[in-house]
Length: 380
Image (cartoon, rainbow, N blue to C red; front, top):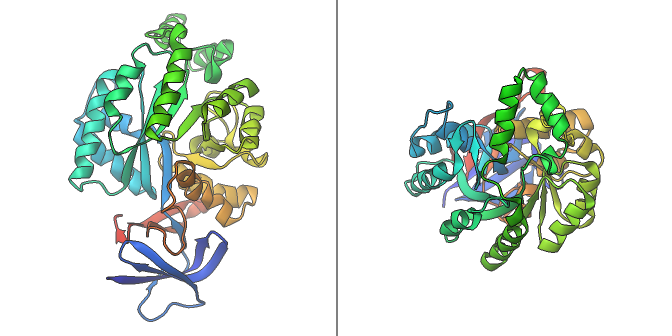
């Protein structure tokens, strides 16, 4: 079995940042040995930070490559390759392709796109064409009358590892304050006619009357197939109570601090968007990821719509908020991994997958991934 030794004076382990040599045998980390200097056979990454490969449980990035411009579709296999390349070069070695089972976005009919996008990634992964490990997160919009018809055909997909329940109807959760949403659209230069059209699209295809039964069915589906369940955009304590009763293990993008804190009390993992953290606030005007972090109500940062935001936000937790390296890196590695039951990755420790990222700090403190390894092989 091939052995590789990698030295760094800044290895981020679960116990802290140390000078050490990471010993990789085959696809696995065999040991992390504290050392002040590299042994003769070791790769010398001195001066750069060595962290585990990132685990992204929520990204819409595949959709951007399947429809790179409104109305212009790309083939699904090519979209999978482009999406994969962008993720792995951002240090993400495990990515949950997060696909919504409802409606349209920027002209993309998600119902029509769902099957081709899943099939494109399935085939690319089967061919060995992908560099990251791609898993599947299906986002279940409970007001969609066709929800179960869209979900059930993918029940036996081996990549399906996460479900989430959500309601993006204007007036609910993420957009509970419709007046504020209207003000944002006006500030963005939208005309009255455009705003009316946007609101009509947001309501299209929804039936609030099916929301309760659909949520119950998704909860039952998750239990039947042993899938972790996330609650998306919880706003109130009552929302979090419902999520707890449903067995949700992740509070995904809670929109208020009381909801995030309550989820934490229940032992749920609180996940926020890394772009929210980097930008300093939510683009929807909801809970700031930084505020959640400062309130000790943050466990996971997901890329949402910018793959590079994960590694950037993790190092900002260290530089701006004074978090220890091990705590900050956990939000983008072991935290997301453990939230979905993945115990074989996310840490630089013996027995873990040899998913590694060599990080060089650039101008302004930017953490640039300069080498990315997955299961003991360099992939970027």
